[in-house]
Length: 151
Length: 244
Image 1 (tube, chains in turn orange, purple):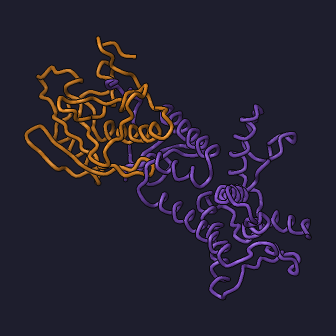
Image 2 (cartoon, each protein chain N blue to C red):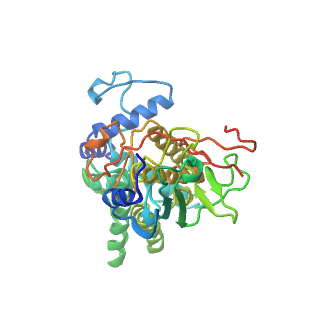
Image 3 (cartoon, rainbow over the protein chains, first blue to last red):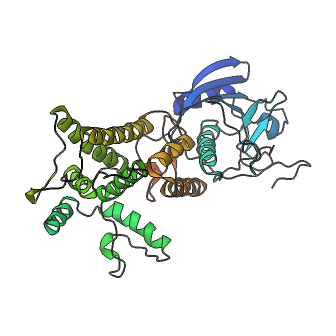
């Protein structure tokens, strides 16, 4: 069963009490909070709209939007992983983390953000720090290439 | 120098720390192409003796390396190894973590110098087994010499404490450590750390603290048994995204 936004809010408050609900409009909610995967504290924003049962939208569209508010992610142009690994770029250049394969069973609106998105953010940021320090991305990963094929 | 008695004194103060010794020595032997899968130190075959037995000794090696980097361009005398070993023996406290022990040894020597300097004297470190013998008979030769080294050690300890308690990114920490300990040891350690982190995350041998930290036990453990962790068991997933 699709988790309602109320259920997501309740779950987030229970598991990650340091993440504050900063916005709520209809079925859309936004949370902000700090995580410290290794030694750096990152301020993160999660925005999510819970779909209606009758909606048939793809995970690619439904997936929660996760942005790192501070400190800014450091880019490395020319890196084989891309100037930032495993992100989406919005029309205005805004960066959101991509932590799931929309064509697999990684995630669906049936899942709790507290049990999936939140821990995946922590893993992504730890892998990002390792990539910045060593050039090696050690978490899972696949890229969307032009033409649609992933490698 | 009564080095035999001093060596015995040092060994008595730095007993084998089994968990640490086993983990570290297993790595050392694996790097040399020798594998052993012992559950306890007692099970390590006799042909593979433990090379390093205590946190104190590893911290001492790092203190010496830090000194070597700090004085790489010096032509005069530098703080003697035996003096640092003696302070390490005094500072030894089995069970401490490596970073804590490193800070403790750095502060120990720095404070000994500061105390001597306040009295207008030069640092004196006697052989604990033969007090008439001074490990500091050739260094320090002046106040400037000893206070310079004290500053180096305080800077090291301050930086390590800031890294543990403050906000620092791994790559910035790496840069700072490079300046303190040189390239080879730091780059290799950070690379090994990153790879171990990746292996443990991908095999789901990790947890999450409630404050958003990644918890990766040093040895395989039942994650659920660790206290202070968020009640989350994230499943495997694939990081995707565009490559620009």
